[in-house]
Image (cartoon, rainbow, N blue to C red; front, side, top):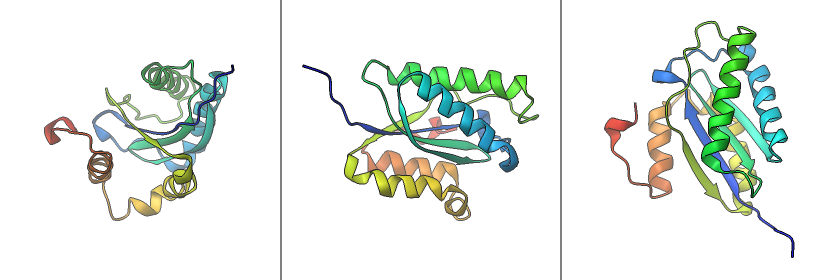
Length: 148
């Protein structure tokens, strides 16, 4: 028997201290680089997007890949890339943690649209407000003081 999975993940993480350093003109290069990391780990990227202070990644993770290790590899690889090519001169790193949520395949198209429209979405809502909504929607207990 082969292994069959279909787990759609939304991975979200912020720049360190939510610094607004991911400038629009260079984000596409960062997204392409992260796509390469996912591809090398046999993960399927559905959508990546973000704004100045955080990213959203919609992906299917290969069953042999651990979520925490994947996020660590993305952050380490992206940090090296950003610094090597001076992509975002004021970039100071990524926040320590991350948030990850699972969705049914039926939700994939709406989720992709949501992530696609991040810039528009964040005209009215901060990253912290968005993260609290996601945590509450997925019934994940949290203490607001840790949502730096």
